[in-house]
Image 1 (cartoon, rainbow, N blue to C red):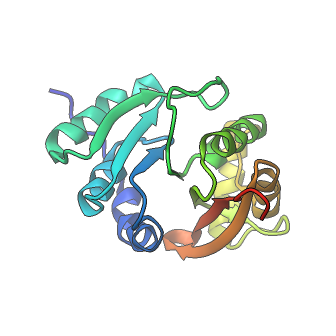
Image 2 (image 1 turned 90 degrees about the vertical axis):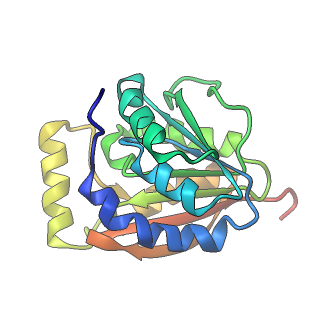
Length: 202
């Protein structure tokens, strides 16, 4: 049997993220997670938000690990992963009242981030929520020395990767029909950003 993948970062940030999800997802029935990674977040959030259905997704290489976590978790409201490439449209999901993604934007190229955000805008209904977790810079300035070092290490691995600037991401979200709602401080100099799909005529 496959050993379950494990992320210590997921263990460290799951409770603070859940506190924000509690506030925003009380009336939501379907959430799409983009980039489910190990599957730890999906199992934990689904167990603690039993009123909603949590749809996992990621590249196919990560599906066995996600399925291992789902198999051990036993939550009936979390779905097996979809194979989702943000650059390939249409996405393999027809609806979601909210989209959650953690630690994805900085490992995507900037063109992929553009496809990611525009795809979220197309998928969400009016009033739908987009919650994006990860490190961000503000006005081109990193929020900590550790984030600056992390950004350098990402760009050394691949020049297309790197911590994204909040203002640039927010501009993409606005162009995709989403209005910025909230910026939440998270562990290890990360943020949890929340946007809402605009209602027509707002």
